[in-house]
Image (cartoon, rainbow, N blue to C red; front, side):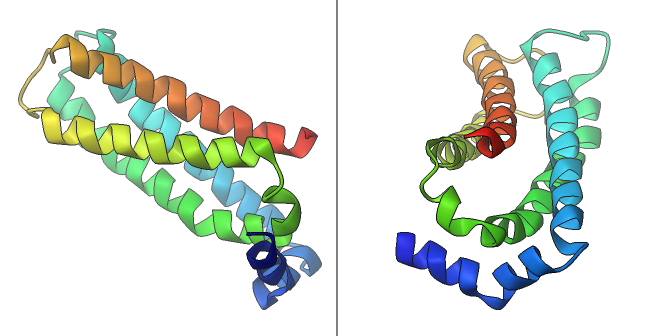
Length: 153
């Protein structure tokens, strides 16, 4: 893994990310925008699924905010490789980065399983689905915290 990270860091993308005055800051802003869209969108839907904001229709809320959350995930998927390439060798040695990646996989699996189990017309989901929604909030907030804490390791 270290050899892969060293190669990525030495690649044209890694060099561009480190040497350009605007590439890394721009990628960082796109990553942050993606985080806001993801947690802002899916976080509100998850809170509604968990039982908050009962006056808001769940189906309409999900249809309005889930695409924003997916767009946020896309922003992070596009900007993340540049952020990684700038400092790949150090990141692959970071426990926080490893935990972040692992929790992203778990959060995405949780979301996929939720979508398989939830009947979209269901206004008040069953307890296991509400637990999955609360788990989603915790996972994504932990991923965000780990992402920020990587700089302080």
